[in-house]
Length: 287
Ligand SMILES: NC(=O)c1ccc[n+]([C@@H]2O[C@H](COP(=O)([O-])OP(=O)(O)OC[C@H]3O[C@@H](n4cnc5c(N)ncnc54)[C@H](O)[C@@H]3O)[C@@H](O)[C@H]2O)c1
Image (cartoon, rainbow, N blue to C red; front, side, top):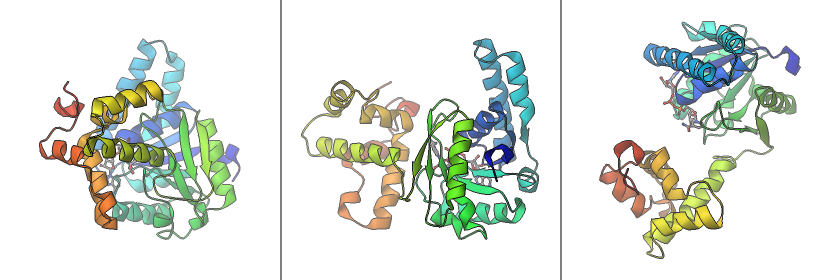
């Protein structure tokens, strides 16, 4: 397949990420079908899309014609078969559960045309973990967007040992066509680049606080003013959710059993107290 032949995109999972990935591709000229296992989530995605587009017009960012064209190109499918039929590229953005993702990949393999590329937007899982659920591993790779996907400039394309060079370069070209700067990884590793860097920073930051070297405010100040990060690691965790931070670290610890992977005390205490960050009005900081 040449990039000019890649016209139809199927997006599976209409949550926070899937709905934005779908609208971004529709806005940039692709015919998109979005589907979710939850009818309620799909309806919520449709309402979100209408509101987002209205907001773009109101702020003068999109012309009315541009908005109408994007809306016309984005369809909400009744089932996966409808979403997958004729797709040249399927992007999976369902819950971060490998068993669920494997089932979705097996279904996509059955329902998508033989030419279609199957990509996962997983934040952590490498595509090797889903490629063998399909009969087309050379056409499987990671295509990792960042939140908010309508706005963020980069996507990570990760080539697994099973992924063909043609698939990787088509995904790179697709990313460019949807207005993103692709970052290509030619060898896969869980977490990819940006999230691994963030994790390394988080590990050091929580170590310094747990061991009493500095307060979280001081660590944030160093990250923000000495390193120029827009948000220090603790302010960022309050934004993305301490519950999420704790859940991810607990899963890593359970899988490895290594003491150095145990969730940091400063995160666990706040998690146990129900202080999840901005969403509960209190995390490291008060809101
Ligand atoms: N949230 C982020 O900041 C972010 C950033 C990059 C990548 N990701 C990745 O994107 C994926 C989705 O994350 P999200 O934040 O959008 O989650 P979300 O919970 O908002 O959405 C997940 C959606 O998947 C649907 N779903 C569950 N099982 C399904 C199935 N079998 N078939 C179809 N749909 C199904 C759910 O109904 C839900 O709407 C995850 O793999 C996550 O790691 C998330």
